[in-house]
Image (cartoon, rainbow, N blue to C red; front, side, top):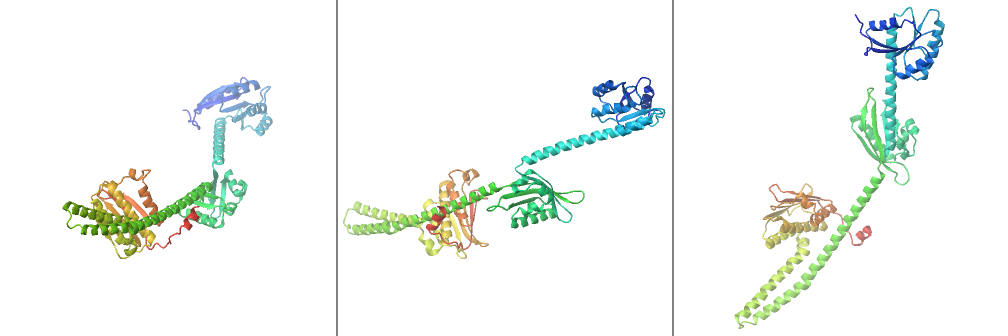
Length: 508
């Protein structure tokens, strides 16, 4: 009964280095009895050995010691010159022990007596297994070297410093790997690998403290590490961002694999955008102030000059009509029609003056001004309006009150132009430390497309006014259709109105 081979593949390729009549058939029978399917080749001299090694692959070499013209050591050196890692076993006869020992010292794997081949098969099995293990180990090392080379090439081309940071049991930090991107700190790789403090010392003191706390929190909670800070250097230093996710190894140590990126340019762009936004906001406030001044001037001219002129015409018309008692009926009707037109003109002039600069806002406050504006809107457009304004607790400065009044005007104008509504509800109240203004209508509503129109300046103007006052602005669809606008401002807007010179000095 055949014995199951101790290696998985029963095929065994054996190269014999021997002269004729060396008992090769008996050796092959031993392998067959062990369950193998041996395939043999034979080399009788050095040239044949080199040719056989180049022609195909072999699992083992069995070399007979004492071949004329080719010693075991010479055959071993020929194999070694080919850089093949094959099990090389010597079959030695009695009296050839010294030459066999020299071959073993030169690198042969085993030496067997020709007249005692009981351990031939186990020896070949052992050496074949070890040879295959060595081949697998070399392949794994080669793959590891390739992977490491690819990783280093990738890390060196990334715009930042790739790192592997470990936290020891005593809480100390050390780098196991840093890429060439560490040059952004003016440091070399060996310096950081020798001491992680070199990296921490390159940071500004306050930012270093924040990073150390962030590392401790990441280690304690197992959360991602995402930190931004500045390095030491000229001016304010460079801004960097550190990102990583902690991993715990089998020994319990925490490891962070991540990247440190230079975000200085992004921070500079962000600061420029913020400054630009502030300047635009200041310019918008300045233009609104200039517009209000112009409105006040026009309202004053209408009230003082045009109003006085209309009153004078009204008086003269009344005197003229009183002197025509005996005039024909048509002439008296014409006088009455002129008198009615004058009343209408005086009412229109008064309404325009109020809209341009509502005196009621200064005299009686924002709630009364909004109620008056809503009433005028309802009379002019025929749209039903409901207005509820809290008289108590509404404390806003002149700038904020005027802004809310203008927003009500703008919103009601939009309702008249676009909403096709039949009802408008305006609510002004004090709510949890904020002044809230709500305007609802039951019209066709507003869509995202409407809000994204390039020339939708009305809503943008409202949003800019509210943001300049530190408030909140929301536009949404109503629960039952229409549009719902909500504005919230902090109470007691204490910022004084800027003089004309101040915004000009800031903007220009």
